[in-house]
Image (tube, rainbow, N blue to C red; front, top):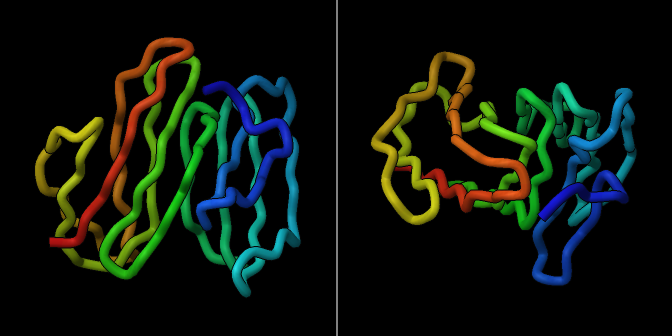
Length: 137
C-alpha cells in the first residue's frame, strides 16, 4: 500500500481511505460527503489529518496512508502505511479504556484523556502496512 492518490475516497465495503505521505507540500480535500457526513483531509509527508463534520478524527506524524477506515460506537479499524514508524492520534470517547491491536496482536489497554484523544505508535518499514483495531473495553 502506498498513497491514496485521490486523497480521500469511499470504498465499496463502506469504509474510507485517505492520505498521501508521498506529497512534498500540504494538500487538502474538503467537503467530501460520505454516508451523511462531510469529511476533510489534509495530507503530505509530515502529517495526515482527517476531520468529520469539522471535528477531529485522525492525525498522524509523519504523514500516512490509511485504507478501509471504519468507525463504530465501540471500534475503529483501518490499515496504515507510512515511509517508516508512525504515530497516530484518534478522537474517541473521553476518559474511556480501549484495547489496541496491531496486526492482530494486543498492544495492551490504553485510556483516553479528558478530550478523548488516544495516541499510538506503530513501527513500520517503507512499503509496509499494519492492521490497526481499537476496541472499547
